[in-house]
Structures are given as structure tokens and as C-alpha cells.
Length: 270
Image (cartoon, rainbow, N blue to C red; front, top):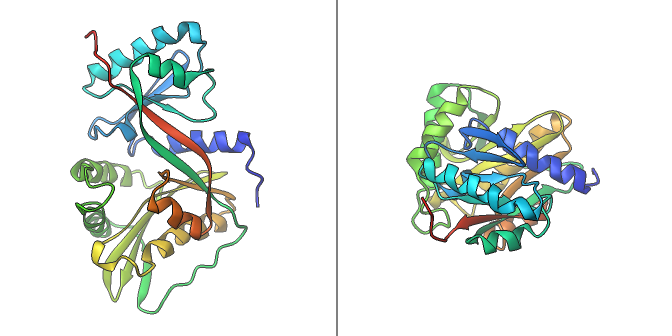
């Protein structure tokens, strides 16, 4: 097991931004002392924010004005994403003084074992999505998995996410997995990776098949594939304190740091 020191954790954060470039971050812009990431289709604050903030407190107000003006110009809520690796000192205090409030907290979870025991039950088959037809099936499962009004993600813009997935699939850089139970598609996951890091995304199961362990299997399938490629740092994000955090903890992932999304709630001068 790799020792997850601060350098590795910080690199994993930055790998996430790269993994989602062209997927849920459709555009990016390097600015002085930071990075702006946004999505031209999805207006969720999870995919529209400034990050990697590295500026002294005496220049913070100018930086924030740049961020606010930019996001307002593209009809998005001004947002800043903060992790323990954000360089600016007292950044959270500075954001609060500037009219921002904490909107959500991500638990960054990392797989802690050197191997994975992938047990696939009878009548369950995992397929890698390789064709447009299979992608359509993947998206149908996605829509059902993330379209349940009782779920934590019940306010998601499914149509926007589906459009982004379709576009990103054309680049063919990620692994998309479909789980079939008794020949019916029921569960999905996505593995993004480079030579050193792997991120797991879009794990979901249709509501009527939940509780059967299919989400666990699809998650561990991603872990297994990453390990086969020699990747030893495998991570995912979920809502801090949620059922999902406990769920992933039970299958081998441990929370190593928290990322907080701050959203502007004050009055704009625009």
C-alpha cells in the first residue's frame, strides 16, 4: 500500500481536474493565482468553480472580484473549491468575509488495500462499454440511477450530464462499465486514470435492484482494473457524512481529506 502523504493527495486532487477535463468540466481557464473550471451545459456548483487558489490575503479581494465577474458573465454562481492543499492562508475566513458560504463538502476517499477481492455472483456479468449502442444502454441506466426523487442527487440535470457523457465517450480515454443481472442492465461505473492515479466516477444502480451489492461490484471492478494497470492510488469523492461515505468505507475506501465548495451568497455589483 502506498503511503498517502500530502504530496500524493494533492496530486490526486489535481489528477481529478485533469480526469474531468472535457467531461464534467467542459472548459478551463488559468488565471493569476488560480484555476477556473466550468461546464457550459451543467450549472451545478459541483462542476463550476475556481480552485488551486494561491494568493496572499492582501490581494484576495481582487482575485475574488475576477472570479465573481467571470462566473456571472457565463450565468453561473461564483464558487470556490477549497481543500487542505489550497495555498492561501485563512482562505475560508477570506471567503466568508467576501459573501461566500460553504455549500457542500466532499469526502475524498482512497482505497487502502494492496489487492481487491472481486466476487461476481451467479447471473451477474460486467461488460466494458465499447460501442454507441452499449453507451445508450449505459445512459439509460444512468438516467434511472440518478433520476430517483428520493435520492441525494435528485436535483441533478440528468439531460446535461448525459450530453457530457456522450461527448466525452468519443474521446475513449476512460473505461465505462455496465453490470447486467439476469441479462438486464442494472448498474454502472466509470474509471478515469493516468499512469499514477485512478478516479472512480458515476457509480449507480437502478432503484429496484439496490441492496444486492451491484454498486460494490462495479466499484471494485474499477479498483481491479486500475490495479491490473499498476496504478496504486485509487480514489473517489462522495458527500461527507452521507450514507455513501459509510458505504465506501465498508468496502475499503478511507476518507483522507475534505474538499469544500463555497458559493457566493452576497449581492453582486454587476
